Every structure is written in C-alpha cells, then in structure tokens.
Amino acid sequence: MATTHAFAGLTVVSPLAYLMPEFSVPLALGALAGGLAPDFDLPLAHRRTFHFPIVGLVGVVLAVGLAFYAPTAATLTIAAFVAAAWLHAASDVFGGGPEMDPWRNRTERAVYDHVRGRWFRPKRWIRYDGAPEDAVLAFVLALPALVVFDGWIRTVVFGGLGVSVAYALLRRRLIRWTADWEWLE
Image 1 (cartoon, one colour):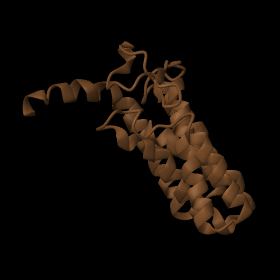
Image 2 (cartoon, one colour):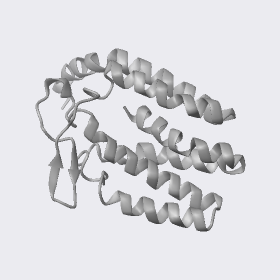
Image 3 (cartoon, helix red, strand yellow):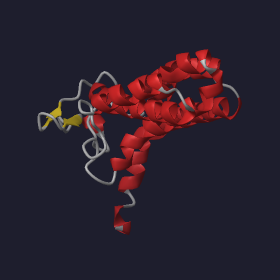
Image 4 (cartoon, one colour):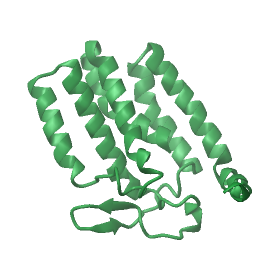
C-alpha cells in the first residue's frame, strides 16, 4: 500500500528526527513524498517508470552523503525523499505483481531492474497491496513515527492508518466494483 511505503520512509528518518528535532518536519516531508513518489507511474509502466531498485541506491548514497556533509533542511529533505523512494522501489519485490488483482498471481513481474534490463520476480511475502499482512506491516512501520513526530505529522500518520485499514478491508471488493464500471470506457 502507498501508506505502508510512506510509513517505511518515516521509520527510516525517525532516528534522525529524534536526534535532530529541528529537522523533523523536513525529514518527514521528504520521507512521506519519497515513499509515495514511485507510484506516480501507475498510469505509465507501473513499477518500471519511476521505480529504480538498483540505480536508486546510487542516488541514496549521494544524497545522504551531501546531507551528512552539509545538514540543512533542504539537503535532509532531499536525502529523505531519495532514500524513501529507493526503499519503496526495492521493497516492491517482496509483494505481489503490479496488476490490479495480484492475488491471482498472473504475473511474475515485481519491479523492473534497469541495470540488467529485466524484471525481478515477486516474492509475495506481502501477497498484494492491501492484503491483511500489508495492513499489519503498515501499523508496525507507523509506530516509530507516532513516537517521534508530533503535531500535524502525527495526525497524518493516524489518518494514513485509517486509510490503510479501510483499503485493506475493501481492497478485493474495489476490483469487483470497478469491473462493473467498464461500460463507462
């Protein structure tokens, strides 16, 4: 789920936000945006266009190195964004495929490896986005953010948890409901 990826990004930056509370907002903004950004390729070649599970690691090293060398709100936001986006892309291999109904296991494509020019196979540890285990993972990943962050960031996390639960409860039904809308096309 998009919320799981956003919470994973927040989990990664939570120790830094705890140690440097003056940068907690830029870190959270970068992590949230980076956790969500790769999925903006949904209308394109999903899990290929904006997902860089191997090449993205180079960006992480460069962005984190810059933020370490010159820790400013801007460099930390960029580092959090790049790290969360890479984590999103790399972790998609542990789920199902990118199709709308992955519980049918119709594809063996998890995320595209631009270096080797081939798709990684899905591990299906999380069977599909919105599966019950995805909702549990979202809750676990949200915990560090709920402890470290406060104010509007904590409110966003609670809201994201609500979205996670609703999506997990409705996920399989959503596909059936949208199939009924095909006549609109």
